[in-house]
Amino acid sequence: MNDLFDLQDQGYDETRLSRMDRRELAARKKRAAKRRRASMIATLISVLVIGAIVVVGWKAGAKFFGGLSPFSASTSTPPQDFEGQGTEPIEIEVKDGDSGGAIAQTLYANGVIASVQAYTNAAIANPDSSKIQPGTYSLYKEMPAASAITMLLDLKNLSGNRIQVIPGEKNSQIIQRIKKVTGLTEEEINAAMEDPSARKLPKVADGNFEGWLADGDYRFGKDVTAEEVIDEMVSRSVKRLNKLEVPKDRWEEILNVAAIVQREAGRDEDFAKVASVIYNRLEIDMALQMDSTVHYKFGGSADASTTSNERSDDNPWNTYLHKGLPKTPIATPSLKAIEAALEPANTDYIYFVAVNPETHETKFAVTWSDHQKNVNEYKQWITDNADRLNSKDD
Image 1 (cartoon, helix red, strand yellow):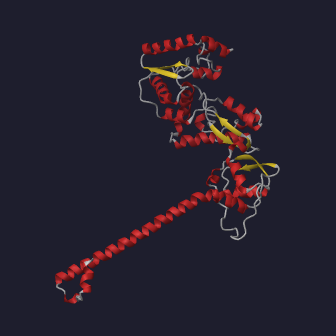
Image 2 (cartoon, rainbow, N blue to C red; image 1 turned 180 degrees about the vertical axis):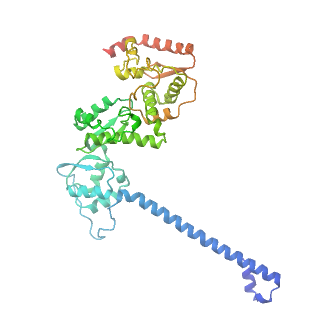
Image 3 (cartoon, one colour; image 1 turned 135 degrees about the vertical axis):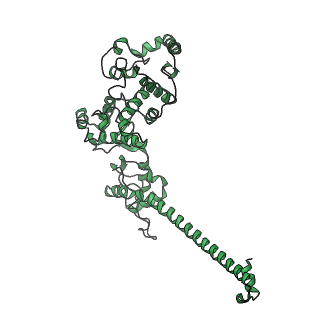
């Protein structure tokens, strides 16, 4: 127990204490007051921290659950909700950035759900409801709100305009996929790329979209335009480069190196080492001599090789004839390839070869003699698999 209270309990009068005792008593009072203030401050801080957590949590959910009010329904009367499996099919578009309230209003306006409040209750009961992605979905009219949310969370119900761009694809391949999925014509897509500034293509790309149509999964509404598709793909590349904090003046260079890495390295584990070879060759002013850059014009082969005629063709992507990087990226690179181009492995490698083109096992070398041993291993694999490779080419 505190000594201060002992003095008071024993009936001591403060005025009768000695000077030293009074000083000690004053000091004890001061310490007690200080402890009380510290306790009050700690309590206040705790309240503020808890309040901040509540506010942050509220704001995090507000974006999706905006417009949904769990308090608007009568506690005695349940909200109107349909029963059964629904009636006639209908397509519903969820736009990028739509909140839960916006989705509920869209469903209600199109006769999918009986009331916004039914959707509110179902969304609150389903923690995954905030994960609904933009796109056009095939649903049914007069569905229970909970069933509508379940269908919106199932990507199999996307009715179309889902475009998947695969790392290593050229723009010509990506354009064909856009055509197939959206029904847009090649003329419309090419016209959208005639004005690079309107598509916000960075100036370092020098007007060429090759390598800038980012890989990934895209979902668009049924009335999407070619301009909207290209804008989104370019925007994703720019966001990726900004997130990696790549200097703007190096954007084109990094995509160019990353594209070669993507096409040359068959395994993610080799990306950084292939990137080191590219930079090491550039450092010593050696021609890159990458078959992938030759394939950009002529296409690939079953054994990933090139012919002497292809290697002697004078085009700005042929790194056998021209030193430095090719005119443009040769494909769209993945995030991992871009990261490898940005942070290559620290090696002295100058050479590499995939000794097994099917498993993509790759061997690296510093000297020409060691590289030749690896090349001979590759050639032996070609000899051992000649019949099968010829059948693939046929």
